[in-house]
Image (cartoon, rainbow, N blue to C red; front, side):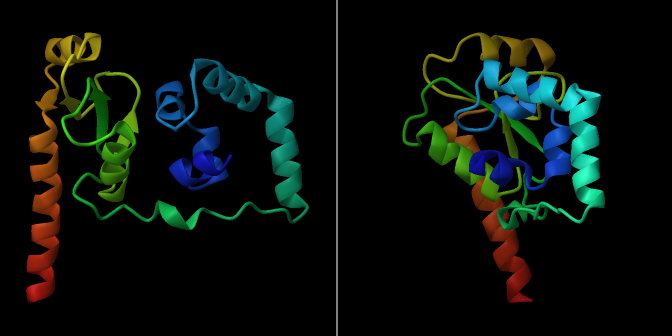
Length: 156
């Protein structure tokens, strides 16, 4: 639950989440993602949420969701293969800290695929769709450029 709150920031964003968005959350697999989607697809469940809100119950927004100004704000990235120095979790944390979202599969909505050793079908799909492909060094350079830009902004 904490990972869902951290990833989506609010109950409304969780309710509106697509399967790919849910799969991007640590420890959420296809079965849990489908269960969440099915739960919020039931009109009765949404009615209960709305009745609770009407009665004064409010779910606080997660404070950690303040990444909208990063260089990757609004961007979706997919990780594939083994990166040379970063674990998958470390790469995901860096991407999210820069405002990006990490998805579990490549689609036409994917902005970047970060490919490491033994990248498989996700890399092939990215090439097929014309998605920009980065290696770990490219990702780190992109993230470093956001820090450089932020530092320049502070210098003025």
